Structure formats: C-alpha cells, structure tokens
Length: 284
Image 1: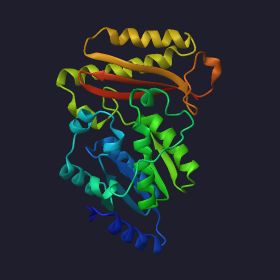
Image 2: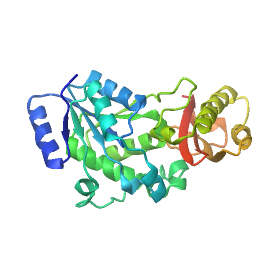
Image 3: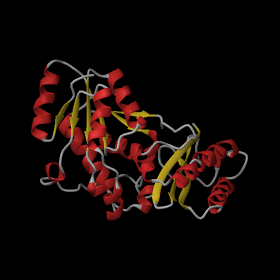
Image 4: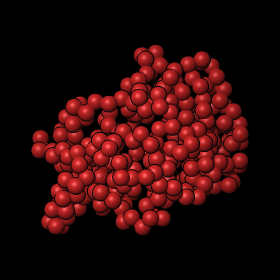
C-alpha cells in the first residue's frame, strides 16, 4: 500500500505539486464527488498507468446541484473512499471544504455554444456552469498533464473538453469507458440510494439502450425514441426524463440517421426517487 497524502487546503496542494513538477514528474488527475466505486477506481488505474504521480479530489460541489434535496441526499463516506484510494496507490487526495473552494470564487459564466441547452442542461438549469467553474478551478490548482473522466457523464465530458479548449488550459482530457455491474447497470454513486427492488429494475436501462443500438438504422430516430418510452411506461417505478439521440460532438438531437456519422443515445430516468443517467454509442 502506498502512503497517500491527504490535504484540505489549496496552498498545501499547490506547494506539494510544485515539488513534484520540479522533479520533472507527470501528474494525472481524477476529480470526483466521493462515494467512490469501481468506475472511479478504473480512472485512478488509468491515471496510474500513464503518469508518475496521481491526484484525486473529493468535493461534493454544491453549485452544480439545482435541487437542494439531491445535494443533501448525495452519498458521502470519506473513510471508505480514502481506503479505496490508498489501495489503488493514489499519491495525493485533495479534500477541501466548501469554504476553501468557494469563499473567494464566483460561479463563472461560460459560453458552451449550446452544448448545455439539451438533455442534462435542459432538466438541470445552471448545472454545467457549476461543474465547469469547479473543474476549471481544480485544474488551475492541480495543473495536471492529464485528467480522467468517465463516459457515463457524456455531456459533461464534451462540455469540459470545450471549456478547457476555450480557456487554453493545457490539460489532456482522457475519456474512460463506463464501468458496469454484471447486469449492465452503469456504476454510479447514486446506485447505493436504490432499494433492492429498484436496483433490480434499474438493470432495464442498459438492456433498453442495447436494443436501441441493434434497432438503429432499421427504424427511424422517432420510432426508436417511441420504443424506449414504451419500455419505461411498463413500470410505475420508472419516470423517463429524456431519451435523446444526438450527434456525439455537437450534442444536437437528430431527426434522421443521415444527419450524423457519430451518434449516441443518452437517457435520464428516475428510478423511484433516484435519478440515473446512461448512454450508448449507436455508431461512430
């Protein structure tokens, strides 16, 4: 087991990482909101493979929640998280308080060129401004060569990519495949909030997405969306927020398959009181 250092202040993290950079070592960074699972640990493993020094941050970012109950309910277990990171040989954990991260910092106004007007942005106004503000802030503090993000939050990945490019932040964004449970459910910190029955039902999400991949091209975009809607109408435990079939780069919803060569289906759904998102690349 490595000796992971934990730091709660920006100054301490900066001074530690200055020493690392002076030794000519590369830094890989995994930003998280804690409640870690195998998906996060895969990001740590990737970072470990490609960099000399690995930093993970745990910060439940209040400015990306437009629903206060959701923020309150968000699972937190720092001791468990620290043990997991230690086992994965993470070198440094940055675990700041809200005050440390936000007291001298305003929410920035980013222009995402419309990427935030669809899907998550439509249902969670202001969400991506909050995400981008904190991710940019973390990048400025850590100054990593590479940062690792899961494909499950696909829209977030595209938006962070654009933010880094627009702000000339020299960080390589490394997308990592969604890690799934045996029954296909995308791993998520929110899964631990599901009841046993809901957890079992939630496996339907990926099964339906896989069917959309098989059917894409044979049926119209609209027919596929109607098919997905019909699958989730079968159980009162499901409340479908959206199913969008979009271009992978512009995130513009498609009306016909001919409009793009890179197509992804993205879904958000309430299972009981828990909101889950997932996606599948239909073709690229």
